[in-house]
Image 1: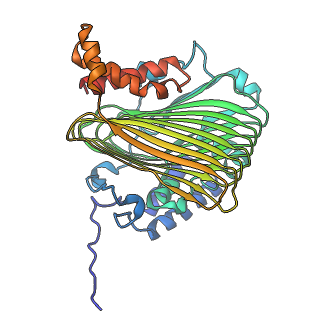
Image 2 (image 1 turned 120 degrees about the horizontal axis):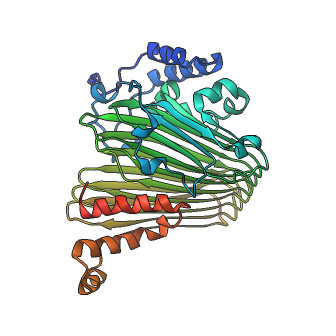
Image 3 (image 1 turned 90 degrees about the vertical axis):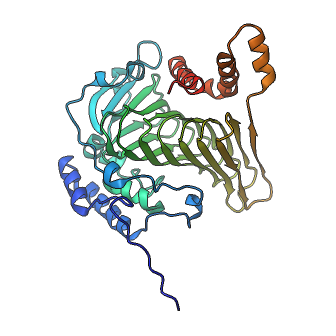
Length: 448
């Protein structure tokens, strides 16, 4: 038998948090006993789990060793920040001059919180997660990392469960429609680590629209965001959820996002990924009830040395369920993207309809894009299909536009925008669409 020596991780290889950090955070937030105990249980699990490496299938193609934990892992300390620090475009109302609620965080600290009277009178709860844990235990405790994202899913999921620094909570009671959209902004203007959480509970027959912005100011040193999103969509409910990420180029993101969709419920989930240096995101939909339907739309654009790893899964846990996933992405310079998708059905889950596709636009010889669709079907009366395509900007439409006097860079921009237009139109807010178009223009023209 040959002994194998494993190098012990250094301060740069892994976070250097301790149980004392968990206790100090819980004390600072004045948390109830049940939450403190939940954090500590997750911490014990975290200590037992190894750091993920490339021997694990989900990490086999992804290397995060350029993340310097001794630099990025320090919990961001709040400062006297004001709402005005967040870019104006991310603060404006989503539609017209009204919105149902607006919650803003800077470096993990709440800087603004408002909820429209019309929502409050309906019994809708919209507040930061720490406040919700204290005031609405009956609503939060059964759902917080117990049904969707769970601490045992991996080292970083356990870390998040133990050390989440801030979060937002949305609760829409049975049969209630939130007529106005809800807006959440998580903004960082200091380097370091933040661990944000979004928990949305839409009860049976209820409806809501929620948009979350993730962004940060330019920094010279590394940061890390370890996040989680949990979407609970009750029977006959309808949730439209939009998540847009535009971190600065020193940010590393590791996130877990999962939705549970009940009987005859509908989820329309739009995901935009533009920023950061490194992204590893697990995005999963659990179709739990007969007749459940989920549409997941993703757009991403990697440039310079960015690396995006988007891992999606559509789990059909009930018969007569439908899922439709479409991701569209582009890469230029030396950037790399990886999409891994899976449609899965349990045995005897008949009459399911699952579709997934990833369309890729390669804009330079040095860029690399990988797409790996997959099916794991344990029923025999299903319709499940997948597709992945790769292409470059077609010269013919570019030449046509140039022949009409349009400069090449603008012509290429127009063709690329046309590629993404199908997904842009799925975002229900014109102002947000305009923001994304500006971001696409900056990437294609090369100003960022």
